[in-house]
Every structure is written in structure tokens, then in C-alpha cells.
Length: 434
Image (tube, rainbow, N blue to C red):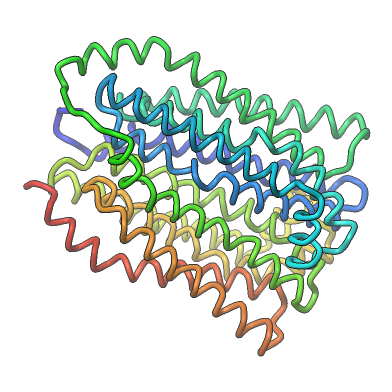
């Protein structure tokens, strides 16, 4: 990575990470397609969407360990200190979901707060039990993946994802064929099996790499303590928690909206398709953290990001605005024609969202690279407030259909965060040397 950075080298570094996110993006459409073809698809799709949203909140403290590991692990000592931090966070995620699963607490959240239909709440409860190991497995493997990225071995990250998808696909297919469980359990079991397998594979692959990493950085005397890690990481963890925590809020509003069951059913499908195109931007944050060393490298990475944004917008727009949308929603996602027609307008609105993903992940990359993580949290707070504001206006006052209100709120909130970060981005960009 000491050679002059070129667009070819950016692509070679980024592509395995992009492939990783793209492969993970297949999970959503694959599992929702299985569930949509199973008994009671509306109830099971709704339960799966809610369970996945709650699991994401539980996961939020560990999701940005990939960025933290890429930025902070510089020698054996910093590795040991951050690993201890990872174990503490992982234990916290397990404790959190166990508390939520206490029946009295769960019923209050699902029935009284979110106001789920009883059938959806029951299906969701058992799915959450299966997803208990999901968050700690993700935190564990993201910690080691950060070391892979810092070492320039991004292909290893992609190999781990191939293993994850194989385990997920095999589990989902076998359960679907057996007809022994509800559709939502197919999704939950497949997700857990995939991430557990990937965590084990990642630790095995990183074994030899760690030895070389420690040898190559044996003269690096940089140190860090738990206080330093916490100061750096808590804005990132808070960002994830706030950002992912908004999904149950959206679910709550959709439960009060017009055509609520249809909205709950199609939203996981829309998320799955849009996530495919968001994956290109999501993978770019660690690229910026690892590769931005000078202003010259920043400019090349910025130009690369701009080209990526144009491509994802064009590609998703072609699907959303043409008959390809019905082809995807019915033949691939497995929605009924009625649900597919219902999902078309939300999909058109949602097609701009991947552009904002590219933009915000490049903004975050510069801020993490310069060790200024606080503005990221403030931007996320503003994003969530924007989402809630749009939902209140659209659903409570304008009586907009739930799915349309949800994707509109996501887009407006994200744009608010993008524009908020412009000022700190430009300010801290000056700290990158010429």
C-alpha cells in the first residue's frame, strides 16, 4: 500500500469488499423469496422484517468494529486491547436480547408499544430466540476482518462471505424442503447458521496473517488503553444504535398506517433489493479508512466514489422505472401480483437511497481516518429525527400508505445527515497531509 495509489489499485482493494457486501445483499432477497413461497407469507414476512429489525438494534454496538479494527489495530498490544473490548461488547449484546425475551418485557414491546398483530408477535418471538448468537458472531468476525483489511488482504473477507452464504443457503433450503417450521424460522435459522460459520472461518483464515502482521509491526510502539478505545468507539456505537434503532420506530408507524399489513410485508423485500445497490457504498468506508494517507489519495478516492454513485443510481433506476421491477418482485422475490403492484411506487422513491449511502460512507471514512467520530453521531441523530418527522406528517396527518411513508422518511432523513456532515467533513479534511 506504499506505492502510488491508482484507480486500478483502488478497484482491486475495494472489489473484494464490495463483493462481500453484494453477497450479503443476496441474503435478504433469497430468504424473503423462500418465506414468500411458504404458508401465510404476509404474516411470516412481516414477522421476519420485525425480527430482523430488532436483531439489527441488538447488533448495533458491534457493527462498526470493522472500522475500529481497521483504524486502531497497529501492533500486538493494540490487538489485545481491542479484542478485550470486543468480548465485552459481544457479551452485552447477548444480555440485551435475553432481557428482551423475558415474556412480560417482550409482550409490552411487541404488543403494547409496536402494536404488532398477535400472530406476527408470536412468530417474531421464536425467531428472536434463534437469533441470539447472531450479534456476537458478527462482532467477532468483523474484528478480525478489520485486521485483514488493514493488512491489504481484502480477498480473505470475501472468502469468508462465500462460506457464510453457503451455510445460510444450505440451512434455508433444507428447512424450506422439510416443511417442519414456519417461514420466519427458515429465515432466522439460516441467518444464524451463516454468521456462526463465517465467524469460525474468519478466525481460521486470520491465524497465519496475525503472525505476519505482528512480525511486520514489531517495531511499532503505539499503545492504546480501554479509555482511548471507548472515546474513539462510543460515537460509532451510538451512531449504529440510533441508526438501526429507527427501524422498529418505522415499524411502529407502519402498524398505524393505511394498508399496514401489506406495508410490513413488502418492506423487507424492498430493503433486500435496495441493499444490493447500497452494498457498493457500504463497502467503501473501510477503503477510505485504510487508503487515505494524503490529499492526492483523497482526490482519487473521491472521484472513484462519485463514479460509483452515478452507476448505482442508474442501475437501480432502470429496474424501478421499467417492467424489470415486476419481474424482480414477482419472479425473484416471490410476491403476489397484488403485493408487487403495491411495492412499485415505494421502490421508485427508494431508488435514490444508494446514492446517499455512497456519499455518507465516504464522509464517515474521512472522519474516522482523522479520528473525529463525534460528528458522525450528530448526523445520525439528525437523520433519525428527520425520519420520525416525515413519518408523523405522512402517516398521522396526510394518511400516506405505510410503505411509501417509510421509504420517503428513510431518504429524507439520510439526506439531512449527508448535508450536516458537509461542514465537519471539509474542516477535518484539512488534517490529511499534502
